[in-house]
Image 1 (cartoon, rainbow, N blue to C red):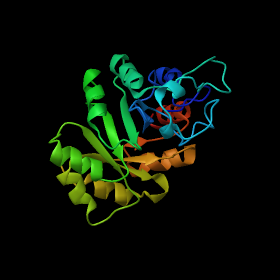
Image 2: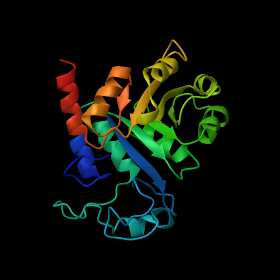
Image 3: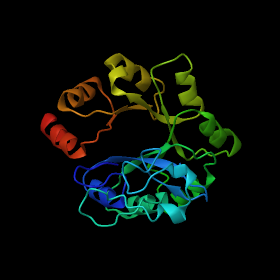
Image 4: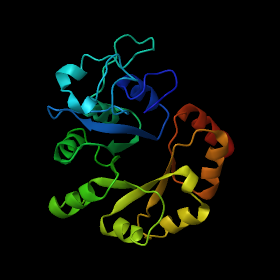
Length: 235
């Protein structure tokens, strides 16, 4: 969740982003007291005025950190995921979100927040491995939550995983993607096709290549530039 000129992964940047983007991405970290917050890095050093591993802190410590360091917005707190979901649930546009799961081992508290703000239909659990996805589908019998998987390419099992556990999309580094790969993933199933998201795509040359090969979602740190490029390119 990064908009040029705004402190990243904050409510300030989110409120700006939802004015014009179709998707956002944010990272999910759980604190020692169970509070679920969003911060990109493993430590707070780069983006706040504090130091240390955020997953070893409680919310009383984290709420004192200024995530607006280096910007002219005054004190900007590290957001709780609940605050992000509230913005998504009340903004005037339908904006989807990729929730990149880090140290969240039990999904139930996050699912409860999605339901509280009526955003389960637009927020995707983005998983590094299938353990949580299998738990949600098989043990919790959760057939509603939206799941996606980070993938480093194709494998014989990928189609079966996508269909058995109803994965919505694969998130793939853009350098690994080809038109054949994208077509192959789209063909995993006819109804509600699996789609392809790519990252991190940072310049016009790669934006063009992703559009040309049929990628469905482009993740970038320059959303305003990408929006302008697409508006011009599709004319």
